Length: 273
Length: 213
Image (cartoon, rainbow over all chains, first blue to last red; front, side, top):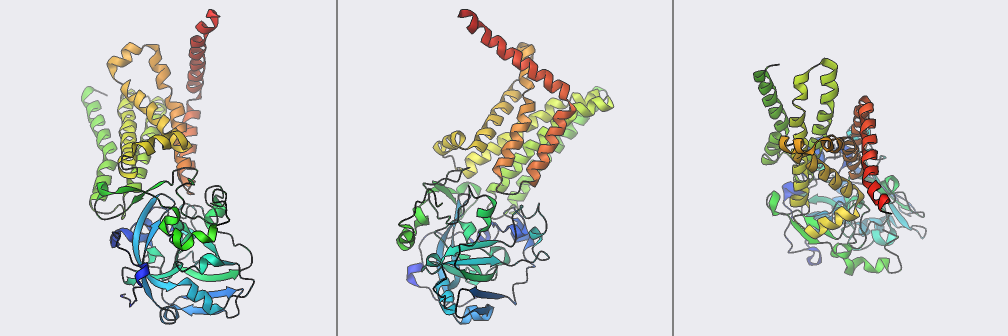
């Protein structure tokens, strides 16, 4: 469905966009299978309306928001962000959505709120990967992610409700997903049902599965390689066919250092990968 | 089986072995291999090589069991398809994923264990494919058997490469691993003979050095 949105100039970009069909047919969404083409094929029947997201935990004003609340109570914006997958490919995507900071502010976090935990829908009937180990890649479900409160309230942190001016297709994490563009793609959790503010650092799915390969922070960093491949460059998925891809250098914080580098000033990024 | 029958069987095997390639080309051509088919192609051809390798290793035990000597005459044909799919696999990796970044390729081969293993496996496959030429085979004498016994460690290396390459979906690599172990177990006397022959060959090479001292 088409959406109405503002276009704040600081979040627009002249970079070449990844075409819609590639953004929507090349997805990691293990709940629907581990192949990149699986989510497009298997996720279409996901019921994304009605939907509700609860905001709970260390807040003075716990909320349950349905889709109309998300669209009407917050400013809906288009933001063009680069998406850098930990597998060393990348896209440029025009998301439509709302500021995560605005949503969190509304729930009024208390002084104990140090972290924000996110959870994907758990519904094995609709998400076959959650009940079938082979299909679901052997990860523990529901998928969970987390940010520090400073990261979650950073101006870049975004809850996407759509892309290319239309509501999100299921395979891209409909109806609401996180987008944190300075981090590897797996941090941007899909189909969120719960946002919980916490005092302790929450567990995160890939870190739990392979802690030596995936850290809590997962900031894009060309100088810290994945143990099994280099992160120094990335294959940008753009227009054109198979042989038109380009390999480009990966930027620190995916090029968003100006907005986020201060969050990690006192952190050893080699250890806190 | 007579000459004509054997030719028919071989033609059939070629068709069977090439079918996945045709399916891959069609899938990519019709945009049915996902929005960005690069990983799909790399995965598909890698698995093609592994399947061909399993098929090659199945031939001897099946031919023995049923007394099908004609099947043994197809072993080289099937084995060469391991080379075919391995070459597609590594070409896709270099051309489509690394986009011909040769420096990156070199550093990945040296630094990443799973790519190192894949590369070693590719070198072995290439050596086996080249020496499968009849003229070369004749000239190699006993060394040919010695070299071609490396298909046993090759099978282990390939499965290991697969297991290390996946992010979390280990079910299939483990399945293949079990298959390879069973195939090696089924011909254990031959494998152990080969291991001993290798040990002897290595000892022989080392001996002259010792005698000089």
